Length: 95
Image 1 (cartoon, rainbow, N blue to C red):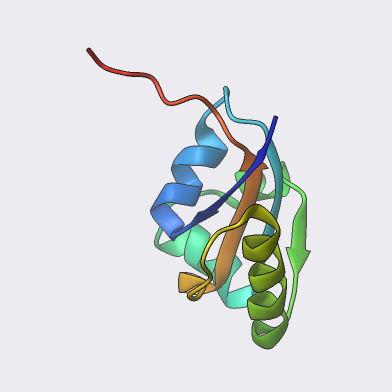
Image 2: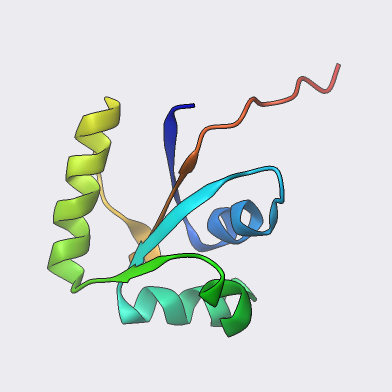
C-alpha cells in the first residue's frame, strides 16, 4: 500500500481515530502535539498510541519537503506544526 501524508489538526485527529487507517507516525514540533490535544481534542493517551517523532520547527519543514518529494506532491508548508504519515486508503464512493 502507498503512503499518504495528512496535514491539519482536525484531519489528523480523524485519521488517528479511524480504525481502518494504518498510521505510521506523527512528525511534529512540541507545539504541534499541543495543537492536537488542545485544538483537535486528542487525549495524550491517544497520541501515545502512535509513534511520534518530535522535531524542531525547521527540521519539520525539511522532513516534510522530503516526504512530499518522495510521493510526488508539491510542498507548500506544514500547518499547525504537525504531519501524519499513514497508508493511503481507498475512498468510498457514497453513491
